[in-house]
Structure formats: C-alpha cells, structure tokens
Length: 159
Image (cartoon, rainbow, N blue to C red; front, side, top):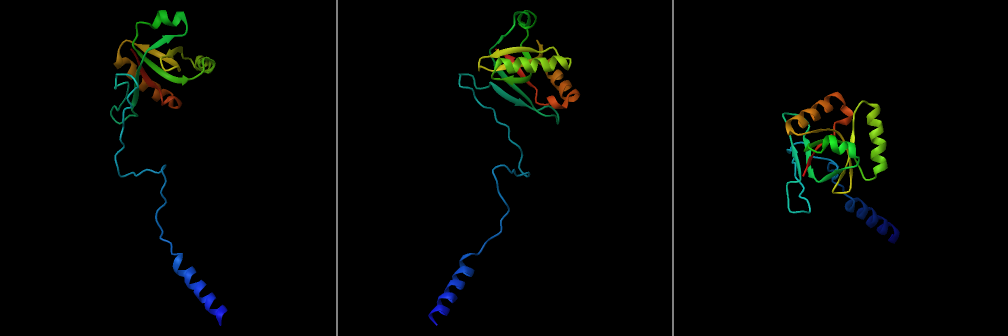
C-alpha cells in the first residue's frame, strides 16, 4: 500500500510540475520585421563625432562613409592622387601583404587599385579617387551595379 501511495504521488508530481507553454523561438539573431531598421553612427575616439556616417540614396543600399587621415604606400600613387579627397574603398586589411595580394586580384579584373595606409592601422585598397563627392558616389553606384560581388564598397574621405 505504501508503494502504491508513493507511485501515485510521483505521477501526480510529474504531470503537474512539467507543464510547458509553447512560445515562438527567440534568438538575438532573429529580427522583428515590423519595426523600421535603425542606422546609427559610431563616434570616434577623437573630438570629431561625425567620422562614420551612413547615407541612403533612393531605395539603394546605403553608402558608408568614413573620414580618416591616410598616407600612400607607394610614391607614384601619391603623386597622381594626393589632390583627391574622396576614395572608393573596395577592401580593408590589417596586413600589407594581404592588401597587396588583393590588389593583384583586382589588377587581373581590370581595376587600377592603390593601397592607402589609414590612421587606424588598416591598409585600404582603393579603386578610384575623386575631388568631388558626387563623382565618387556615382562610381560606387556603377561598381555595385556592374560587380555585385563588390556591393560593400564604401567611401573614404581624406582629412
């Protein structure tokens, strides 16, 4: 009789304590499609807070912009591009060798890339430079349309 009582209590405990409530799976990687996407700018560690902007142009992917001080890694690149302020960046690397290898790949595809060394320590691979922001933006749009694999190109503004 005692065993029967213990078994009855155990079954009662099991069936009453383990109730589950089904809820939709939630993850930090899922997003709510009903809310509007927010774009934030990240302030730099320096005094200027507008070093990184994202602007959207008429239903196109936003063009990221960043202001940096840069130096040219080769003298011939400097002489032909030092008067330009806007640079179309197609790649960014922490190691110079990686940037040079990527430059060779781009040369094979018909680009004339140059490598810039930024104040942040990264080597930026640039495919074009301009004096006018409008010209640089239209080149980015053209690159994105002609080469979908390079849809993440962005605009560097030389300080």
